[in-house]
Every structure is written in structure tokens, then in C-alpha cells.
Length: 257
Image 1 (tube, rainbow, N blue to C red):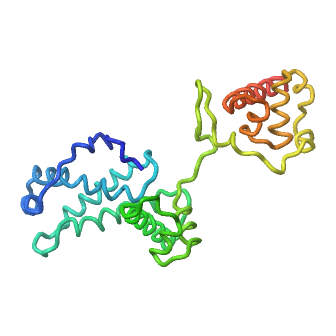
Image 2 (cartoon, rainbow, N blue to C red):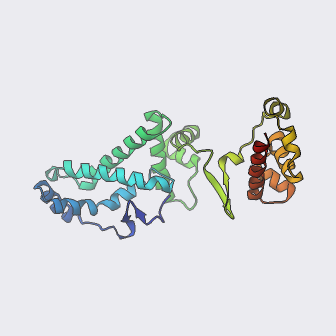
Image 3 (cartoon, helix red, strand yellow):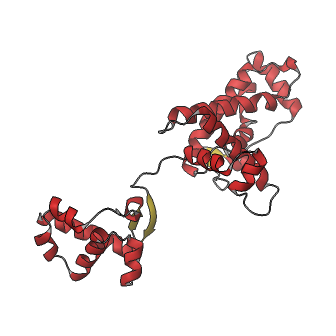
């Protein structure tokens, strides 16, 4: 989550103000009369509500700024449409508005299309996980959430996986001394073979011009299908060093070819 992220969209979340129900009611009445200053104060006084809601929807800090802005749109819509005479607390009216705005945003901006039923189950699961976490000593498991919601573990797992943002092969997962390790560096092709490489790329002569260590790493990595972590453990160097040597060797092969 982003509990330690102090600033969202230029707003210092550690200094968000809160309003009493009486203050909200008075500001809402003034807003309905066209008082712009009251409207701004009302928005500022409910940002903490938006912050608490978006924590249900994201596990990545990078998403927080976008969701905070979308949540604020939902808050403004709630302020502009709320009727102070209906006898309902403003937060009771605003929360569904904010959640609805966030869900629409996530649905429309997700690279993968997920059915509404699956997405709703995922959000219910996230909400339930948050509720269980406040009661349990350990982190709630998928089984705990499934039992609480009356769903199967498989349904919960698939729903949560469905709303996860796709990971780029070029996302860095580790860095050391300026060398970055990317997702693609952790993937090996189980079906790759020496024959398929030799049939498609004429690298015999280029390989001869590599150092013994470079040649060994290229063979283990691409001919034997080993990951960089496995290679690092076998030859006794760090994974970051394996990554650097591999990239350098491939570049030399390209130049030779």
C-alpha cells in the first residue's frame, strides 16, 4: 500500500483537515447558495475520506496519485448533488459516489478487460481483507477471505489476479551499483535449444571472440535455459554481474554479426 506516501497530487496527506457533521452541513448549505469558498473548504475537509477509500483499490504506490484525483472527482460530484434535507449523513452519500467513480476509471483504463462480476468480487475481497486484517494478528489468507465471503478460494484468487495490472518485461526488479535487473532477465525459455539458435542466428564465429566467462554465461543462459540467478549461484558471482556480462556479450555478438 502507500501508507507512508505523504504527498499525493501535491497534497500533504499528513495534514488533511477534518470537519464535524455540523460543519459539513453548514458548508453544504452555503455551497448550495453558490458560496465557492465554502465549496472549496468542503472539498478540502473530505480529502481524508477519499484517501481512506482509494486504499481499498490499489497495492502500488504509482497508482495512488491517479486514484486520488479520480476519487476527488467523485467527491465533487457528491458535493454538487447532495441534498442536505434528505436526512442522510454526507459520508453515507459520498462513499458510493467516490467508489463508483474509481471503479469506472479502473474499468475503462485497464489494459485487460475483466467482467463486472469478477471485478466486483475482487473489490469485495480487497475490502474484506482490509476488514479481517484489523481483527487478525497475521495477514489474512485467500482461504480466510473466501470463508468470510462464502466464496471458493479459486474464485477469490482468480478475481484478485484478474484486476492486477500487467507487468512489463522491462520493469526493473533489482538494482546494484547502477546495474538494473529486469523482469525479462528472470525468464527462461524452456523450449529453447542449441539447434533452434544455430538454425536462426549464425553466431558460431561471434561466440569465439567472447571471453571464457562470457561464453559460459551465454551458453548456460540460452542453450541450457538457465535463469540468471541459477547461473550466479553456479559460477559464484552476483546476479547483477551476470546480467551485466550477458548484456555486454550479446552486444559484442551483434556487432560481430
